[in-house]
Amino acid sequence: MKPFSMMLSMLAIGITSSAAMAEGASSLPNVSPANSDLVNRGAYIARAADCVACHREDYTGGVAIETPMGDIYATNITPSKRYGIGNYTEADLKKALQKGRAPDHMIYPAMPYPSYHGMKDEDISALFAYLQTVPAVDEEPENETDLPFPFNIRSLMFFWNILNVPSYENREGLTEVQQRGEYLTNNLEHCGTCHTPRDGTMGADNSKYLAGAQLGNWYAPNITPDEASGIGSWSEQDIVTYLRSGELDQRVYAGGPMGEVVAHSTRYLTDEDLGAIAAYLKVVPAVATENKVQPVDTSRLPLPINESITHDLLAQDDYLTQAKAGVDASSPEGLYLDVCGSCHGVNGYGQPDAGYAPIVGLTSLRRDEPNTLVNVILHGAEGATNTRPNMPGFADELSSQQIADITNYVRTSFGGVASSDVSADYIDNVAAGVDQRPFLIKYAGVLAILGIIAVLALIGFIIWNMMRKRRHH
Ligand code: HEC
Ligand code: HEC
Ligand code: HEC
Image 1 (cartoon, rainbow, N blue to C red):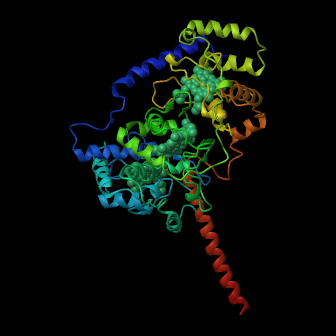
Image 2 (cartoon, helix red, strand yellow; image 1 turned 135 degrees about the horizontal axis):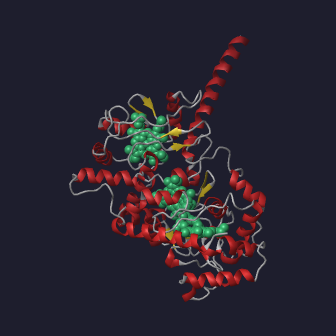
Image 3 (cartoon, helix red, strand yellow; image 1 turned 180 degrees about the vertical axis):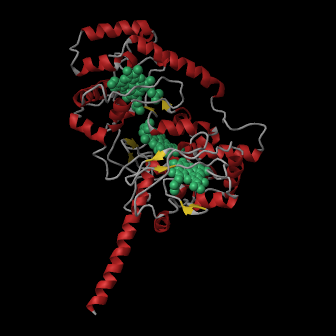
């Protein structure tokens, strides 16, 4: 199904982009000796706070944040006076970031101001100086946010803000490095907008701080130091490596939303700052959740066929042809060999030289809830740093039963799990996002807006109650 020629062309793409990468690896694109220190510091803050995730690399905005009420579009924040924030003073930017108030309207929490609330004044000054130097783009946005009543009443955010801003309190008793990590994690990088589940008002549920949350079809895993369900087994260096490169060989690849976080933001942070995040993640309260990662049972993992073969594309292809000849093409193993084998190899070790990921022992295969694995098969994976080829998705090519068969085969053969009985129904549910909590969407934080409904209902109830009492008298 995946012809060898396609594999070779993917390889070529991988090589050209890795050459391009090598030059600018982790230097910040917007930093230049021609700029003042203040501006360069602001460029760094913009990376660390990942403004470009939503406002795009040129800050013209336009990224849609999906919500059940309709899409909310990130706006143009270039210095354009007409379409951007050219008329903002530094105080205006501070209010927008810390309080969610633009000069003439309240901002929806699709913009993570509940996290930016704690941003330091000096960082906002630097950010302001930097944003002045970005080229102004005088263009009308393609799309404008147009939510239905009552969500179009922006001033209602006032009530939600009382309940949910700020998202986090600072902890006592942290070392200086851990405090820096806390600031980066909570107030700049806003890791919790994805990794912390929501409470009833759609604010952060801090009893499950960083303990994992559904994110559209994806699942942002538990990143507390719990051994079984979190990242307790990761060393600080593991965390730094992952945030710098988007991968930790033999364990995880950031191929979904996390790949974007690494690509736009964390790979640009200094070693010191990534180290601070890692040090802080080691001391957040461990929360045990149900979605456990089974420990690696090395006795169940396959051995690499032979070093020389896994590093030689043609030999690998030969080996694949031989392996296919021996099995029924419609069996789970036959399906794996046909669909996945050309890149990940007969035994899951892939072709590390060519950037094709070894998948033996990955946590995504060992999770009790294999939805990340299923999502990767359905939608593919994009390497965080362009140094790897992308993996295509197979949602249109394979039936749910075939995906279930491959999922089970991969988990038991390469994940070392004792048994796996994922069904076609499970695949359908992950694909449709059915087994998620009610309104989960790309940025779960946005759902916070639903809190408004609760407030409106409450106000309605109080008025109704008062009128009723009056009638009785
Ligand atoms: C998770 C997505 C996201 C991130 C990250 C984000 N923003 Fe936003 N931002 C939005 C959205 C969406 C809006 C529009 C919200 C609305 O319409 O109420 C917005 C609006 C704004 C506004 C108000 C503009 C106006 O209309 O006057 C400013 C200023 C702003 N963002 C600056 C920033 C800066 C600076 C950063 C980085 C520190 C940042 N944003 C990061 C999504 C984001
Ligand atoms: C846009 C949402 C989002 C943000 C913001 C985010 N993450 Fe993630 N993270 C995810 C998702 C989804 C995954 C699952 C893998 C993937 O997407 O590739 C993940 C995976 C991870 C993993 C791997 C855990 C495992 O067991 O496999 C770690 C560690 C992690 N994130 C840490 C962080 C840190 C630290 C931050 C803040 C600097 C952060 N994330 C910000 C969504 C996010
Ligand atoms: C065209 C080559 C190609 C094919 C075919 C392919 N993959 Fe991948 N796969 C990749 C690449 C490249 C990556 C690494 C992406 C990255 O760096 O984030 C990857 C990553 C993965 C991961 C790791 C993702 C994670 O977050 O844990 C898994 C699991 C995986 N593939 C399984 C499969 C399965 C199962 C199939 C068959 C249905 C398959 N792949 C088919 C190229 C391929």
